[in-house]
Length: 611
Image 1 (cartoon, helix red, strand yellow):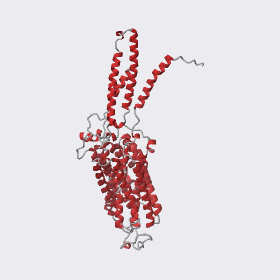
Image 2 (cartoon, one colour; image 1 turned 180 degrees about the horizontal axis):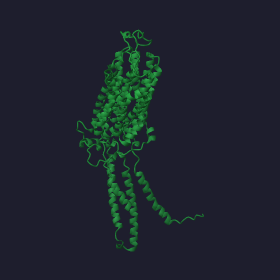
Image 3 (tube, one colour; image 1 turned 135 degrees about the vertical axis):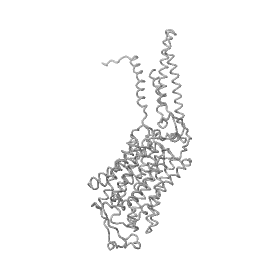
Image 4 (cartoon, helix red, strand yellow; image 1 turned 180 degrees about the vertical axis):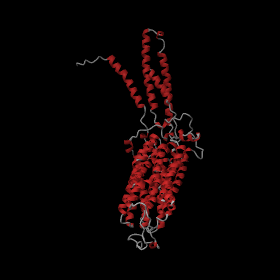
């Protein structure tokens, strides 16, 4: 009996304060409260039984006293079993109702009235982190032209006629020429491609590791260290290039490994800071930093090289690397992994965030159920959609400049505006769609699942249709650019779609899931350009490009459809940790089995070992 009293006392100490979002079913909360009430009632009954059992035995007569003690012992055993069963049901309540916030009462209807809170600061710094990451990744594409040089073409040798099955040459094309650039390194085009590509080999290997480290150590530390390492090695790139080609390649691989951990780490933080209805908006803001980084590296990198500042091309690495180191200062000062850990968060913002605890990451570390993840249709929906989007985007990024130059005969290389227009369109579409869906969700017009599907449809079906339309847009550069802007621009709304699904289905395992999805997407970074090169190599005709467009369209459509079929918007059962009650249950079962063994020993004769 003393064990039961101790057990009940522990249960009352660890009783939970259940909270749910106003959109969630409150039946579970009522059930938990009812169970706590039942446990309290049983405690009172049991205490009364103990008091009765401890009364002076001299008050009753001999036989009646024996029967009384026997009845009390039986009643005590029955009460003990009842209390144990009740405690098991209370403690085994699903984790979504078990986030402890005992410092204040929650009002599910309360709204955050602040124009700018700590979660907005997190989103801003996350946006800048992606911009810095992508500038580190792409700046070499600009600098390597000055590093390795480029062979020029004289006006006489450049006087050509249009290839068969290509667009006619525009007026004045024969008078143009490619300016020769003297480089400092004797790297051919294949070597230059390797210099750029080795980054992605490192990037593809660290996504899952980074996601898991973020779940264990916290996204703030993992993302911050990742950016610092990438910035530091970016600054070292010129020195390594002058020292040895092998060292320069090794540094590029290390940069990829360091940066591969940042994407998943940011996701683990957003799931703890942002409510489900704001998740798509905040994720869109953070991920749109990728386009800013590309635009900054194209524009600012070219200006730095032409200016000759700090030697020309080395300055691109110095400047962008230094920006990353400066960014790390406010990141570690102003950001925390969870809202309740932030010293400057307001009471109203913290209360607003905590009203959605049913979908917010718990404080504990959850063991990764790999088998359940790899057999989950909802997880594969995110993975497949990510693969299709990566294939489509990287095929367009790698191939469209060649298509515009070789088939449409547009001077893309010397026209930065043409190169940047699709990315500008993507940023605009991303913010507009995020604001639109945010209003719909807050007004309860549509569900989160509907937003995920609509966003992914735009991000998959519109690019798919655009690829098909390019097969019929022939020798019209203006219309071609319009189609490309629509295609790449409509991939922005996908940030409110499948990119947010990992946070929806597994808040406690967001880092791991985002790492797996991004790894599969990184694999497509090699597959897409490889398919493109196989088809176009030595034959850049309209017919060849149509094959590329059709394959890309089919991939985008198929992967998007797969996602629409199997997508989920609620946490999956394997998101939650195994109930800690399992050890207590095992111990209780042993205690319950001991009386049976004693009864068997006392009432049954000992078997004769000789029989």
